[in-house]
Image 1: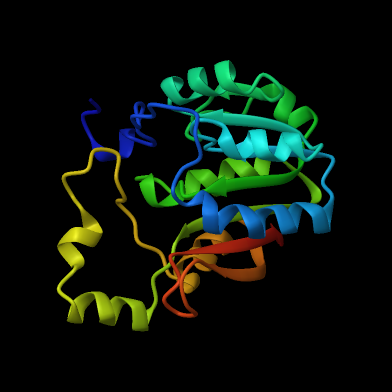
Image 2: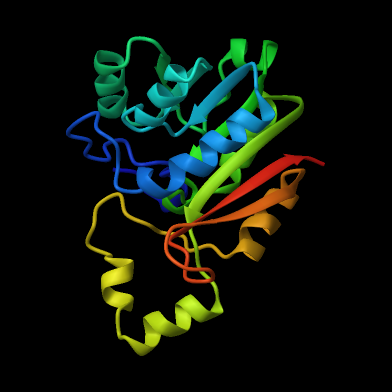
Length: 213
């Protein structure tokens, strides 16, 4: 265990037990695939790929995908289950691999990762160093806004929502404004906002499409 929270950039064992799709796939994958089909990137980096399922879906659609994650267990599952994609153990707190910088990606995708990081700015810094000019950075995270937060409060569900005893759980809670502010500090600007799952302003997650400023 790290001696100080700032040393814990990402959990090293999220607890993946299979290479099957996560619960969030049902509402996150459709808008992501739509963006991929719209923008037609030559190469995609799945940053925080977990067990590799999303990378496998994008690979099956004919895309060239590299998946990285700090969790070696998730990467092992991905390598065994999805041989068509390139998977590597990599932490966003480390310097990007030399080949990522030398041959940057046209699109970087990070799904449900930024809420797990003590140092979330490192996610954007890493992406910025690996993104080609004109490339885009897709970031999803659970949505928080005034209406949703108010309903959680009125229903007394904050303890369940935070679930603080869940190892590897959420430690940051983002609104559209705070996530865009984080991106702006790293030299990104918002290109599109997509609410994912449930009803407007009660979305389960949000997908932000960023481009380099």
